[in-house]
Length: 268
Image (cartoon, one colour):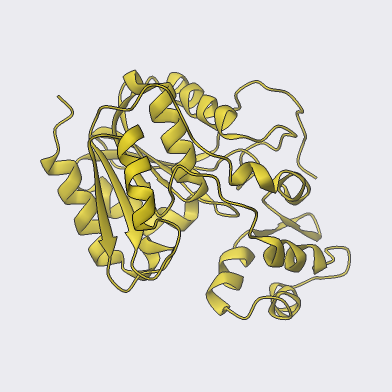
């Protein structure tokens, strides 16, 4: 099993690196990992960016810890920038990563040049991943020896093939045994932390883009005022024919929209 640190110190995060230029940090969502963003990261790096796709704590190849909340994940990001001598970055986050990105921008505006939040609002979301957690806990890694066997078990709980494949990307061999890359026990115990509200007495005053999926209910029109209160310079764009995974559902629109925002918005 991966080590459990059980402390409140920032962690050194695993990452994938692409291109050269202005730093752009990509933060994945719950149960995700940096590799989910490989296609987009390579594309946007060709536009003059050095892209760092991160594995968040308790995900991917980053360390596991008993402590899990947005304040700590924002401090992980600050520590990452210090480690890699990055002074001012574009920060893009999806879902859980979007909430981390919001927390980071509000806590460390001097380190954030521009902010992009994908299909998540600042408000509190009640736990809604119970079925996925049931499915993951049903996979007995003491007896399951192939991804196809794991998929058969997941299919008893999750109908959507794409969701199952997204989860199965986290299975890897450790010796002669399959393991999950995410910290399933801590994510299960602290799932309420994933939905926690992001708030601040001081708004983030630099260019911000919120992207919502047309078929997603994560950002509703009722959320726009709250978004504007915390991020007064926010533009809100809706991706046609896209659900929660906007970058996968409509990749061409997503890339062009992000590129246009980065090229045409000024942080001055």
